[in-house]
Structure formats: C-alpha cells, structure tokens
Image 1 (tube, rainbow, N blue to C red):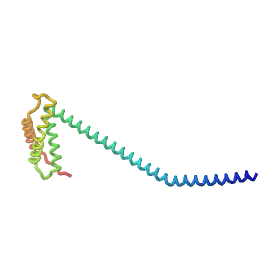
Image 2: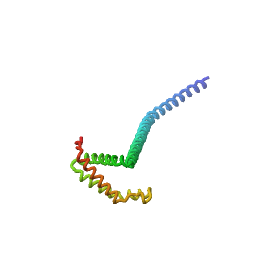
Image 3: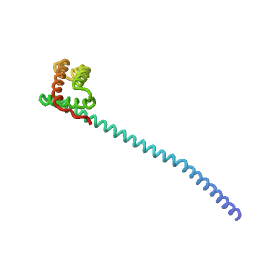
Image 4: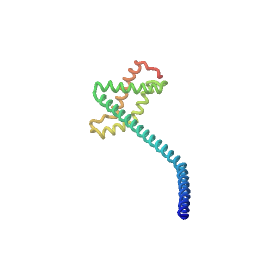
Amino acid sequence: MRWILLFVRTNLRLLFVVSLLANLALGVLNFVVQPIWRAAAVTSALALAEVKSEAEERRAVAKARSKEKAKARLRRVAVAVPVVGLAAATAFEYAAYQRWQAENPSQTFDDYAATVLASSQEVAGEVAGELTEVFPEWATPDVNALMQAMEAGLQNLRHFAEATPTEAPE
C-alpha cells in the first residue's frame, strides 16, 4: 500500500510540474506570438487596402481614357459632317483657345495661333503618314493644304475670339 501511495504522490508531483511547465510555455508562446499575429493581421489589412486602392485607381484611369476616346470619336464624327463639322471644329478650337487663354492670360490670340501652327506643323507629317496607312493615297489630304486650312480656320476663329469677350479666370 505504501508503494501505491508513493506512486500516486510522485505522479501527482510530476503531473503538477509538467502542467506548470506547459502553462508557462503556452503563456510565453502567447506573449510572443500574439503580437506577431496582430502585426501580421494589420500588415495584411494594409496590403489589401493598398491593392483595392490601386485597383480603383486603375479603373478610374481606364474610365477616364474611355471617356476621352468617346469624346474624340464624337468630335471626329461631328467634324465629318460638312456643315456641322465646320461649326464643331470652330467650337472645339475656341474651347481650346479659352483653356489656353486661362493658362496664359498675358498672351494674345496671335501667340495662340503661332503656338498652334508650330505644334501642328511638327506633327503634320506624322498625321499624314497615319492617314496614308488607313486611307488610299488619293483620299489622303495634302499636308500643305491641311496647314493652309488650319491657318484659315485660325483666322476665322480670330474674328470670333475678338468679338466674344473673355471671362476673367477665377
């Protein structure tokens, strides 16, 4: 009987020591690992928010691009109709002049016309090359005739711009 009592007492002590060590190990593990888990959760939440933000930004940029392409398409269609095209081209150019005037209030219409003609002459060859790729050669406009038409359009726009008072930029 004494051996049984000694066996039970020893096993209880051993069970107590093992239980104490296991609880101590779990406490230290919880103390060390829990902040790591929290940091990982915060990091993953930040990464997810950044990915969502980038995706929303890409969608917004794609939507803006498609909107600009649609506007350009509508402008091309409006310009293609002869009578409406002249009015539309004048309106588009006048809107561009108004934006330019707001950005450059100290400059005149002559400065705008010179800027537009210079930039148009720079890209006229490229535009003509693109048009020859799409249309047959007989349907492609002459670059010189195109530039003369641009100058004539700017002269017509000059009369319109001088007749319309410009608003002061806010």
